[in-house]
Length: 470
Image (tube, rainbow, N blue to C red):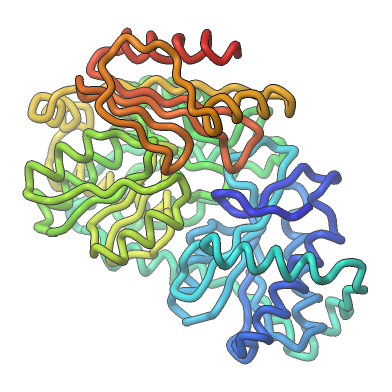
């Protein structure tokens, strides 16, 4: 039952996320490494603060050790971008991170990274799944953890400083120091606090943190930075007159932002702001990359600088691949993940937060002012996002209707074109669009609609609800 989605393998703890399945995955990857002749370079594994994450890392580690593969285990809960950085920096063939990212607390999972720090693509994950199938009921060998450590097959490490240094080396710390910014952090009970706080305190910021304790239930909320989950951060920013509030999801690869007015900034706004800043003020040249469910405002900004914005399916592996192909400046997604050329090829909420704070310092303006000026220049687009949990029976019916029969609701706007690159995306002649697709990380149908007017986006979503009877 190990099946990779858009963001690794995720499963309910105790149901499919079990010691047996973790060790099957480790055995399969070890056999793949042997067949590829890359075992001598070793493997790195990290973990986040979810229930059983540390234990799962160790369960995997002793399987690699039994296969004679030296494995570096990060000895404290850490951000996913740290593992991506370590694989890239130390030229390892593979790395693993035990996390279910922003999924509910009952989930855990594993993300696999390949050479260069890239998310394992569909070919790689399909091959891993094939190795798992071939194992069948094969007994998985493991060795005692302490024996593996004493023999040097497992090495416990804490590479957080080199990761933090890699960010501080490319951020304008001096510009931040001169502004004396007041910043509120919300790691959402996750793993970003040490990294972000170290960077910001080094830059002489006044930093306060909420929700920093270890809570495997994430305070009873989804560990995903959104308008619904960041009310406490909004209140803190307003009450203490902060310049910005920064939140990260459970494994710190995605970001959420509250501006100086206490308003939630949609991740679409963040990627557009940063691309605009990097090209106009830092002099970077190149395209932008977004997934198929991310704002077309990025296209407008790219076009204004004589650049192209490329559209790819959902999944950061597609973004990083297209960035490498086109030498793009930035790649981002509407769920809050982004990266920039010259950093790691995977999404990094800690780096994104640091770059946003640099932008505020360098431009010498409030975040709300910068966003308003951007919208005055490029216009306004509003996105409506809706999620629908579906039973298996309803899911099959909706799938048949949308992606097999390819039927559409009666929509109140003229259609320019339709794409089935990932789900069903309709582009309207008015400049708006709507996409319906099944989540690759949760059992949900998702509808995203972006239009110049908010009421039009709502109207399109309601048309789909009526048509699909959901």
